[in-house]
Every structure is written in C-alpha cells, then in structure tokens.
Image 1: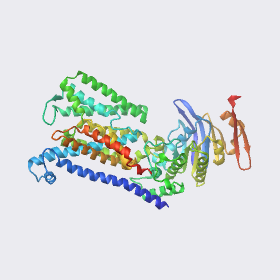
Image 2: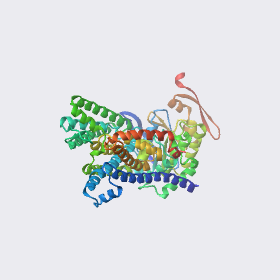
Image 3: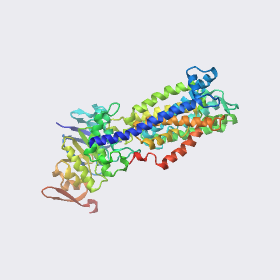
Image 4: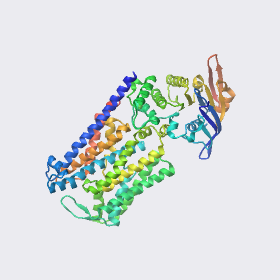
Length: 257
Length: 356
C-alpha cells in the first residue's frame, strides 16, 4: 500500500505557479531522490508532503488519509522533516536535540522510554562520545547525523530531508547517504532532495526529476539519459556505465556553445 | 552502553536541578532578610511573630502592610520580567530580546506622562523619603497599562497581517518604541517643571509603590502567565531550532509565538505600570541563567523566573540599605549590580563546563 500519495497537486507563491499538477506515489522502504535545477520546485514539493504547505489544488494523502485531516501532532508521529539549514541561536546538547524528536509523543515530561529511545539512537548513530556536547560546536557531518537522529526519535514512517548532503565533504556525504539507505531497508520511506546526481544515483532506489514545477521523469537509473539532462539542466553531459554503476560526466553548460 | 549514555545525561540534568533548588533557598533567605531589614529595627523572630499576629500593632503594621508586600512585589515583579525576557528571546530567536524589545516600557512611560499632563495626576511635594508624591497614582497606573496594551495590540495586528516572523516582531517593537518616545518627548516639551519632574520620577523603577492592592493584581496576572510559559517549555525548546523544524515536530508556531508575545507583554505591562521601568532584569537575568545552566527551556524558564525574583529582591534590599534611611529607586541598583555580575560571568566562563 502507498505510504504517501500525491494527487494532482498545484502550488503557487504569490500567484507564480511553482508546482503544476504533480502526482506520485511513494511506497514503504523506498529511498527517493528528488532532483532538478534550482527553483524547479523540489523544496516546495517536500513542504507539501510534510504538511507545512497545503497545495492550492489536489491533495496529499498519508496512508490513504488526507494530510489536512491530521492534527499537527499526529502528523509529526508519521512524518519527520530535516530542513536544510539548522542553526540554533542558543546552545543545545546532542541528547536534548534528539530528545526533542519525542515531542509529538510526550505528555508533561519525557518518560523512561523516551530517554531509552534517545540513548538507543545516540548509540546507533555513534554519537555517544558527544552526547552532552553543544550541537553548534559539531562538524557538519555530525550535525546532520544529530538531526537525522531527531527525525528517528519521532519514530516516523517517512523521513523527508532537504539537501542532506549539501556542505558536507566526500566522506560525510557518503556516510549520510549510506545511513539513509540502511534506514530505508527498515521500511521507513526516505525522501531526499539532492543536487549531486552521481551521489543520488549511487544510493537512491528511485528518482523524481522536477523541471519547472512538473515531473519531467520518474523511475530508476534509466531516466538518466543525455537528452533529458541536457533539456533540464542545460548542460552537455556524457554518461558512463559499468556493470555496477552509472556516472554522469558534465562537460559544459549549453549556453557556452 | 545505552545505560551509560542515559546515566551521563541524568547527571547533567541533575546539575540544573541543583541550580534551581539553590535559587529557591537563596530566595527564602532573601525574603527573611527583606522582611527584617529597614528603618525600624525589628528582629527576625519578631517579624515572624508579627506575620502570625503575635506582635504589637506597630510592628504588625510595618511588617504586614509595608515590608511584606514590598518583598513579594520584588519577587513577582522580578519573575515576570525575567520569564518574559527568557520567553521573548526564544520567541524572537534573538539573544537581545527582552520584555522591552516590543516597546512596552516606552508605551508605559508615555501612558504615565499622558496621565500627568492630561489628567493632572502628578504634583510635587517634598518629604523625607519621597521627593515626588502623585496626587492620583491610580490614574497613572491605569494610563500606563492602557498604553502598554495599545502597543501590544499594534504588534498583534502586525503579526496577523504580515506573519509573526522574528524580524517583523522586532522591527514593529522598535518602531512602536520610537513612536512612544517621540510622543513622550512631545508631552515633556509642553510640561511645566513640576509635571516634568513627575514624569521623569515615574520612570524610575521603584517598589515602594507596592501595597496589597497592587500585589494582588500582580499575582493574579503573573502566576498564570508563569505557569503558561513553563507548561509550554517543550514548544519553546523546539522553536529554538527554527520555525520549520518546530512545525514538523507538531508545534503551531504562529499560535505559540503570538500567545507568548501577548502574555509576556501583559506581564511586563502590569509590572511596569505599577512600579515604573526596571531595566536590565528582563534582558540580563535570562543570560545569567543561560550561563549557569544552559538554554534548555525546561530549566531556563523556571530558573530565570526564580533567579529574577531573587535578583530583584536582592537589588531592592540593597536599594533600601545602601544610603539608609534614604531609599534609592531599585531600577538604578539592578543595572549597577547586574552589569558587573554579567561581565564577571562572561569572563570567568562560569557555565562553560555545560558545554565540554
């Protein structure tokens, strides 16, 4: 059964259309990469999927029920969202930050179970040594793991991440993507928006290519064809393939012809 | 391993609870000190007897009708200002947030000036303890409160119309503040010497204006607001990480922000209208407490409230005793002891151990 069902959604900011009639279904355990140029509507699509924005037309369903009919707490128990830039003005420790993921489940105070879940996630994500450290003093890779940890503490069915690998070095990019892939194996649907196509191709199970607010292509690795990428990204590309992997080599922007 | 992590965390939490417990003890000590100190020498045991009606009438009058309301007013006024400041910093996601960021103090000062000039509520009279007596203090209080609310409504209006982002709130606060300063200056320009002195004197925060009547209104307003902020501590924690993450964790950001601002403004308006402008407490007490126990709102909000109460009470005790029998306005003392205290904390790095 579909986890998330996007049904013909349209969205406009101040009268300017950003999403035009987008439909898609996302299933449990999928690791979806949303790709597309800057301003194509990737982030807007994500915000519609987590209920922060409500679409002008159409609807998004979670397990067959319209998102608009969920209370904000109910929704937070099903969908976790990791936005791109997360800076705290005031310090907060790793443990406290992950514990906040229990917020939608909390009564007056965190129970023993909440603390256990938090400690378990900290151990799993290898954050034990820095559990009482201020998150503002962590490296980009560590911070990203902390916020993925917070998303996990929500015990969601779906985790949406807006460019989780931006600003990370090679090692941490792969570490984060690997972690997300492992999570998707546990029947959590993972949806990321991502610019690095080669990175996405290595880890994601399925791709949604957005161009000017429309789904230009969807599917597995087969959607990466030179003519599509040249149309969408306006870059001349070559594609290499061996038995395990497929790579895109960007050659030059088309406007330089 | 997991048990280790939980243990470390619990130990870390315990240090915060110790701070709160310590502040509570400090407050009790200061209450005793505040009640037994003053021009009339009344011993501590005598003060306690007076509270239970076992003392002579004069002592009873002094303790019950002068010192006790003043001590309680200091505590709750300090609590109101500090907890509003801590909440405001979180709501506006800005360390410079304070109960006065939204222009409340300027609005209240204008209200007082308005009452003095338009209703003729201020006249001058010299006495040993007070240089200015107001012939109608209630009109001044009501007017100050009314104009504080006008300022709050203005901000609420902007929040409704343009969204309650921190930027919108801070800008509106600054604009409202300057507007009221201009209006007050205009009134002062038209005032005569006596009125001018009355206006300026009102702005000095002074707890000697406290009697049971004021105190009861203060308690009715401040206690529910304190509980509201403490009840919402998780929401503020989540809000500290940003609007979108807060929304995705099920927090209604607009509602929390708007309610918080209105209630912080209300608590501040009551305190300021009764006692004048007490600077510094709302801005610096939350930061002192942050340095001591960190910014986890679960501990910061109650911690700042308690510490703020103790801090203002201590300031008032100093204000009463430093050049006794003359009593200084407490607003002067809060800045005089608060500024060095904060600088010491900043340099000593107390609280750094919170962040290894």
